[in-house]
Length: 260
Ligand code: XBP
Image 1 (cartoon, rainbow, N blue to C red):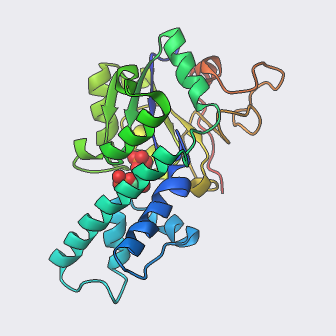
Image 2 (image 1 turned 90 degrees about the vertical axis):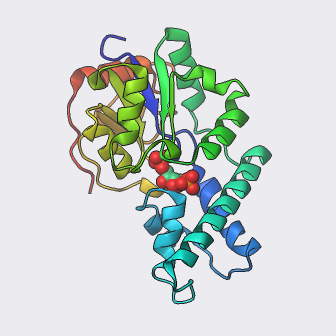
């Protein structure tokens, strides 16, 4: 492409609605399996999603629960067990086919492969969760499709820290300005922007209305050409968002003003 060489995909909320269809449900299954009465409804989970990392999210919730273990070491051990159990339930849900790729994602992945645009994964989710999702949808050889796969275990600080993007850039060997990040959450956008990448924002279930500044484009998803800022020509076929659209946005480089 004229304006960029590679794409870095976030996973949760971008490749699939994993938070809505996977992680939240799996956390609740883990609580139940452990005999704990705790449940996270969508509203509470939406609040907790402001904290990156499933284990960190558990610890944040325990910090405000009177019935959580009083000693920090015990809370840590419980969070570790619950997190491992959550990830096992998550993998089961993926294997059952309960977590679809978002519409338009597979098409853009295929277009990248067909047109020689390199791809990477930049997620601060556990590697096991990325592996489960991508193996299910892209097959056992999924890693070969990506020039860089950076996950939660590879970084010391999760998003909004830029580490995950800086590592992915090193593995790609590209200039930040030549790599487009695809994100959905404010913390992810902040991480990518701090690393110097242009960012495309696909709104997701839990971050549908958050104020997000500085993206090259913001829209509802790759399946639809309507509702994007800057806008796309509606007459263009196919109806999904493709690499030429992203290239045009990179060229424009117009920062989109925050959404209230
Ligand atoms: C997403 C996260 C993760 C997931 C759950 O990060 O914050 O915590 O919610 O995954 P990103 P884990 O935007 O970088 O994909 O339980 O494995 O943390």
